[in-house]
Amino acid sequence: MEFIDYYKILELDKTATQAEIKKAYRKLARKFHPDVNPNDKTAQEKFQRINEANEVLGDPEKRKKYDQYGKDWEHADAFEEAKRNQRSSTANRNSSYTNYSGQEDFSDFFESMFGSGGFGGGAGRRATQFKGQDLNATLKQNLLDILEDQKQTLDLGNKKIRITIPAGVEDGQTIKIAGYGGEGVNGGPKGDLYLTFEIYNNTDFQRVGNDLYKNESISLYDAVLGNSIEINTLTGKVKLKIKPETQNDTKVKLKGKGMPVYKKKGVFGDLYITYKIAIPTQLSQKEKELFKQLSELR
Image (cartoon, rainbow, N blue to C red; front, side, top):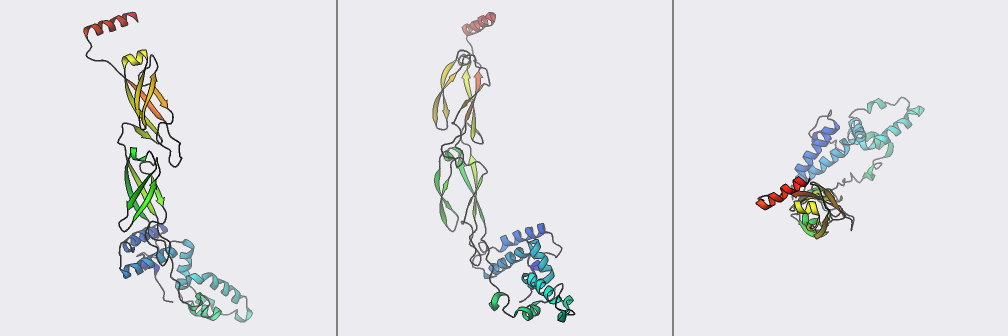
């Protein structure tokens, strides 16, 4: 088997750190991925080599074996076991095992110990399977669009998929749709689709998690005397009773009038209303006199 320099494939030195290996792999995998280079066999072969190199060098244990045994790294355990067994034999006590170190060729040794079909049955190296590339997409929605579950068709360029968007998804939330990414290599599984939501708040409500907040202007007279008013929620109007002598910035909670809770059917957050008392302006002379009388009574 021909020696393959995995460090060279990833364009790295042997002193590269694990972080540098990971960074190099991601960069090259994006560059040579089959989805980016359709119908380019050279790029596909390069991509396979890159994945193979990362599989070995990205695993510290495999990398250690590769650094010591080169192309025969996969048989390192068997070699060590055979070497221990042979050392225990008196007849072979003086055998020159020290010759098998560093980047030496171990193939002859393996064949002498196990035969040419000892590893892989002489059928050649089996092509390694790799998972396909994960895809990322962004979906923009209005706040009112996510009050209920909805079905939507996504156009991924080369195909369209039909998905159900759960009610209550949040801005910036990412969900995984398994098996809708790029095709696998050598029969490997497909990648996944990661869908990130951008939720545009096209309402007067402020969303914090599953709860909603809104300021509601009320008249001075309603605040002092009390009254029933109608306010808007995301699901329609509701009647609200203002208590007499309500103070500015008083907050009331409407239970269950907030956002639907993600993937919890029938469960909702709450709506918090903060009263903002509107001071009357452009008072008539008579109104001013009445306010003066009130102030004198106090």
